[in-house]
Image 1 (cartoon, rainbow, N blue to C red):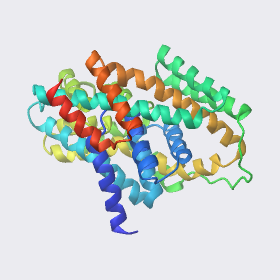
Image 2: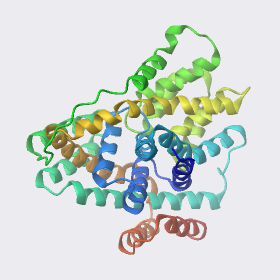
Image 3: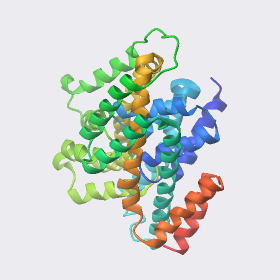
Length: 382
């Protein structure tokens, strides 16, 4: 393994971690734009398979996709490099907020920049939805799946609806979809080491170790093991797990900050860990962050190869066609709620979104150039 390759992966994801506002759906759009269209590290079909896998596993969906992209490039070390690069900017910001006064809260110019970057997230998610729609909704039945999925999630938002539409889409795809795979490779079992480690850490309370740092690790590991549906779902879980150990106002400050900074919302754990482990706030932030991300990454390692071998089997490949169509619907619903609805409130906001779509899709300008433009717009116009 060349250190230069790991450094490249780290730096690529570090750049994205500095600009990836907008939550999981936007992150998936950033990854697709950068690693599928620009860098061509993987093709559209393989990327869609990673997104589909992340929908079925607990944990931070977009970070799992990023981890899998790094794994595809350079194995598990590549996945770790991708995670460190993408998460580092938001970790630093969340830690600073936890250990100092409320950062950026009353800074009008900074609030304008953050709002402008949320508008850019609308552009990115819209572009990702359009691109995946063109690739995975070419038949009438797949178009119907995408639209019905979006309608279902807009009317009945929630993780149970998401699982139901994905399951129904898989069944419809397996019955209607067609696969061009000629050979069915041998099935690969899930990774034994990562699966065993996941189970061992999940059973940690049975060891009856009463050290506060072990309890802290277990609280956040449990939250990461149970979260389906993205960063917003981690809020009630962590509130329940932490109980009375933190005031509601302090907790909500961390949650609001996690939504304002770029990168994964799961770095809320960085804020909470530093706040809970006041004797060693950096150690607490690092431990909580590792614990909340670890279960999702262990499951990606465990099921990555078996998912790929399964996806080559004709019936499963046809089911994945249905899942991919449903993922388009998931992105379409996320484009409205929470991405569009939380960012666009005036005619000027919508005008900036339309301008961004023209620049990205019509003139094919780079994301980095758009980030600079939107930062300038945020300081001057908003």
